[in-house]
Image (tube, rainbow over all chains, first blue to last red; front, side, top):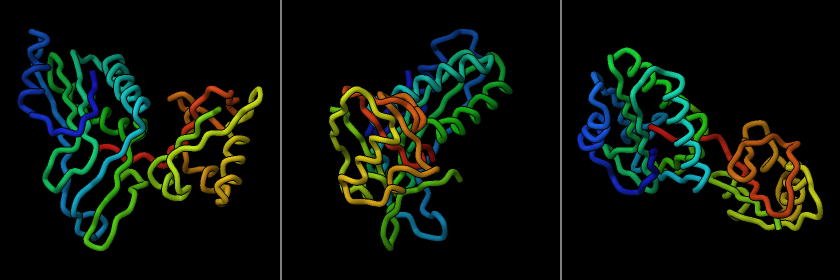
Length: 138
Length: 83
């Protein structure tokens, strides 16, 4: 079950919990997105993530199911934070477990790409000179 | 009343995050958004342009989708979740 939450998450604990769900797990691939201190030539102070409550959760869970149907994986989990997040802090975690590694790498990449296209979440970048909504897909 | 929801850059251009408009029978999403921009006194392109996505009751739709009085219509600017 995907989660949207303000609070930080513990990557190790999340991975261990997903791995323990299935004794056939041979690989756990993670994508961890964090706040970097620059964007488009400007210094980033912080990011502020807004979402469409109700639809965002629905789309995240739909995406997890789509990933499980598209790829021969054992399980996957998406956790996305909302609200203000500072430089070096965690934004999003995607974990994919599978019997062997290749499909987990592929599924993990697909899930973050699709998340950016499908889930109604918006990023407000606060820089040293102002702020603006990010409206492209780098 | 149909409820219209605005987010992120669209919310800022509209100057509000929500608007309620009564619907007698049904009206297209394009039609109700046209009423909304008139009421807000903004350029139609704020709510109707190719970069935007639309949802009714949390499901994406196109602008020809028919909206009824109990619906929630959301205008979604380009998405930017993830890292």
